[in-house]
Length: 229
Image (cartoon, rainbow, N blue to C red; front, top):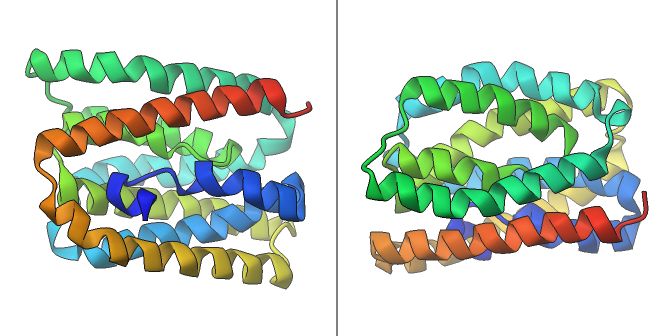
């Protein structure tokens, strides 16, 4: 329900639970399947509000970049990446507010660049959803349009990541089943939260997103420093 309102956070919330229950090695591919279903549910809930130009600009470079990131997952220091992403997410809260005050608009070119960079990181770490927030918000999307467009853009990245995992034998049937169970629960929460999103005004929506970005950034820093290497 929380991720259905703010458009991200399901991975941040669920990955500690999945890692505790199944171990960190299984948690990442399980969450990859669940993330596909989470994004699919937001697309279905807000289908008519998708900005297809923004979706194409982000996804076309992002999908192959996600596959490349997944292939290099084992070779990169995940802890350093978690720290960098956590700091970036927190820093983007005042930057996004400054961009809004300056009426700075993200263009389709900016979305394409963000898609390539974030797509690569998506292949490496559990979740990069919070990184998308400032770009799609600064492009001018809010509420249903933001939720649907960000979800559609992220869906291709997670499918690319899952296919790559599958090609390396990291998605056996039991992992897929666990991912489908977790993803089904996320989908239900998304549709339950739709009415709450519809009642929010744009300013309140942005305020909630800033709070979620702060929590996500701190969570990634916590994970980087607390989780054993």
